[in-house]
Length: 235
Image 1 (tube, rainbow, N blue to C red):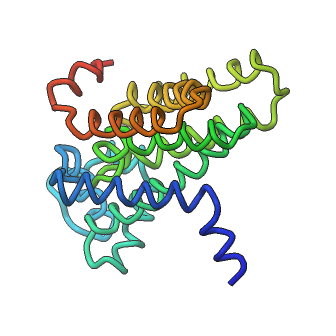
Image 2: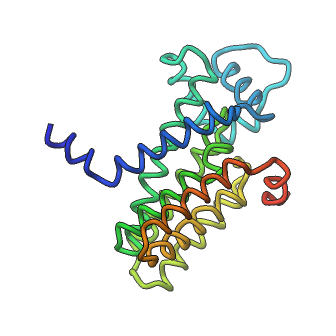
Image 3: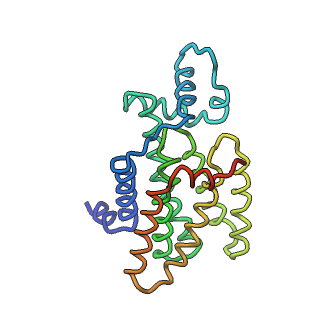
């Protein structure tokens, strides 16, 4: 009981509550769809792994995303469908990314306020629910990118120059990984959230901070497909 109370008082409860609210707004009020043009290829890959005879075998998914496929098949036993399985796995990664990113920012700045504000900026970013909590495998790769960055920062000498040098190889490796789409957004968004959260933490007026965060969320909710095409360059 004491552990539950401590969790309810922690920063993690606040972040997870905001993350759930964010998903509710995105999928129930804005009616965003988790389906994309790539979703069918993941479905066919899971069907093939379960013994289905297909005219065209999606080797690109089988070779580049085996962990996501098998974990989604396992989750489908509980959800009742392959699409439900991959969505359940992505929901887990969604909360894990928020947790690890909070730890990453805290490790760099040693300041809880900065870590919380940066995490709020990350979780409310359009890419988290438009590219992440979907019938695709992108979010798993994004999680391991953030996790790798956290370990790079934590176990290298903690000077600012070394921190930046440690994150750069992870970013380049992530960019080169052919299994992931939306690579530009997935690399840039954590960096911008980290830096912007640090800037927000220097504002002394909580009302101004709250106004900025609300405006930021509203802007992300209203982002159009046209703007997304501009942001995500074709390379």
